[in-house]
Length: 177
Image 1 (cartoon, one colour):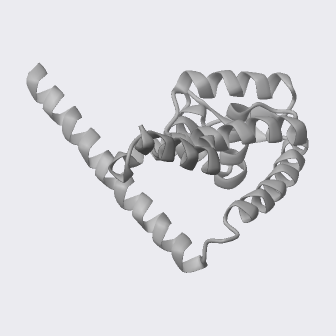
Image 2 (cartoon, rainbow, N blue to C red):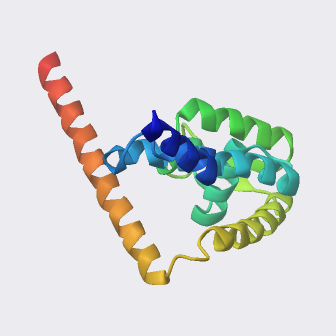
């Protein structure tokens, strides 16, 4: 009983974030990454809506087009690792809002390229600057070396997950034959 009281006191001192974080240990990194991702998404949804007047899905399409240049919805979906239907809905909303247009795709006659309008570029510039400032605050106590190491580790983990997914696809394809 005394032991539980100490755990309760520790939780009370550290707060709900630390309590949720400690539900699973460091071996459950995907849980913790998902948790952090959800926290950042919640902050981003409100922030992006206020600054740019777009949804998070719409922002992601805008950001990919701003960085990658004109691309098809399929290329955006692939680059963002997002379901095509989600990209299609965002594209439709952005078109209706006058934030992007379509042009013929010289690489594929079946699809069109998405092009940001000047108004969309202005929204991207404004929101992306504010987001850089926001992430600067989040990363303020992380050194450039730690940030680089963290990014390298995340990439290694992503590569492992990608390899695993491709292996699973190959195994499934082999069973279908």
